[in-house]
Image 1 (cartoon, rainbow, N blue to C red):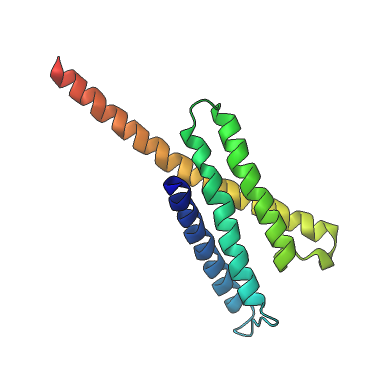
Image 2: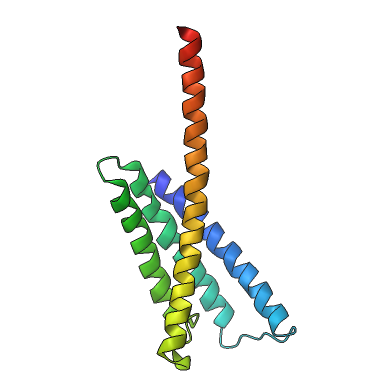
Length: 144
């Protein structure tokens, strides 16, 4: 339970950081006139928290060695992306009113962004594992 909580907090932090950065970009893009009405900001912030949990909590599958790595990745990203899509349509991040083409474009962009974040974590943990393995090899070599 503790691992799920920690993973969820990390996911929430990443989601809120992305939300803030995107908000800054939109504010500059709209020349400082980017307005939200009808509790839009609150809905989006709560949506961000849900997306963070949606990606953070399922990441515990990486601790289950009984599952093949591709299945772990599929479960983690599949659950997270499903939550992202539900929240995106609910809070208006994907503008369904602009037509199917725009919605598909936004979904594709979301998918690319999710994969980039995942790949960054993948590289980080891979380097960490390589460093740990080299230190183990060093110690094993000294012990002989």
